[in-house]
Image 1 (cartoon, rainbow, N blue to C red):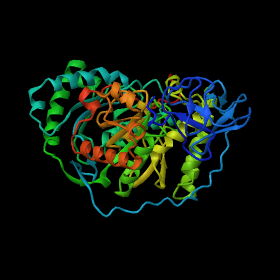
Image 2 (tube, rainbow, N blue to C red):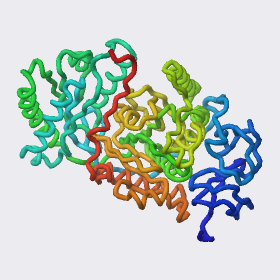
Image 3 (cartoon, rainbow, N blue to C red):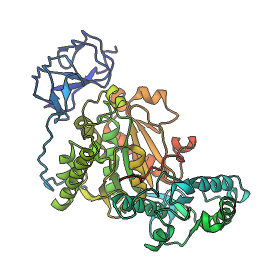
Image 4 (cartoon, helix red, strand yellow):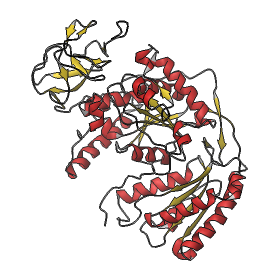
Length: 508
């Protein structure tokens, strides 16, 4: 290999592992560590730097990522065959870290769509929101007919029509946590600033009743909201015809809004990772964390989620909480998840996925420590339930599953008008109405899947680009995308299948 290129990286002085930066053969010598490999080690995987006895902790990032399940020699490959999770206990030290960031002196802006409620959209879609799966096909029929119409093409300020369909809304209890979560999700999408108008379509006899959705509060401050049920309108054909007529009326209203400058404080960015690898916590996630800090300095909102994937790293967040109450709220969600998984015959260490493990991640503790890096260093301003509105500026946490489409669905319902997604294996997806910026963790995957990736963070390793420099590059991409630049996911047409509400409780 190129002698000028590092063969491994040590992430913290106290670590007893290093991470391979290339596929290394057995017998290779690590020049920086003075070690000889006892076995071949793939890129992104861990190598022991000292003898580790069975039952001893394995340290990466200066934190415990698990316990050795057998004796490990210096130069050994550390992975699932000799590393397990071990007991999970943490000192949460709520609100003990002073991580306040200085405000910026230069006000930056993006060109967005200003809404009547004071929010600003990065896109201007018409949405067809469904209360139940039974109205999903009709919503798609209306959207397909609208996309073929002449009048939609004439609305230069309207980005298109998005049918928001899902697999629930009936066959469920009408008064439990699952119902409340779906209710918040649908209401949140109706109010997301990336929609210039919403048509709500139901069947008529479902558990998630249209009158309940619209009766709990005004769905949109601008009044560009209509609703109908298939049963009352007269069936499929009549609903499509009426839906098209209503969409045209709403499109005329939405088209009157054009982009205008807005400070970055009007951005709300969902922070996501999926298809992670051993580089995620070294390159893309820390770089996104730096960009998150920059946004928080500008008064914006950034949202970290995926509670099962912060498990083992939650103590790093509780220390940054603005108050003990905020820290305790995060731990309450952790305990909820421990009970939830146990009651369903699962366990919190059901991660990493097979793809994560091929990329070098071994335990959920290791994955979580890399995942929380997306949240930067800013104080934790609040902890919210799935799809709960987030309006307080700063770095926030929203509870969600680790399943990416579901987690992003909650962030958009909470108000995210931009999403950033880091990936090491090569996740492909998009999330209409909110544009998604994709960050590649390694240069090899970026070269292979450059049509899907917006930014390569692998050059932090291959070219020596600093995390701070890459964070500033990500911020500039955020501003460009928020102002109308299409992401790779948008160019490819993603976003029509990724609305995945969190379905809790019994399906009846």
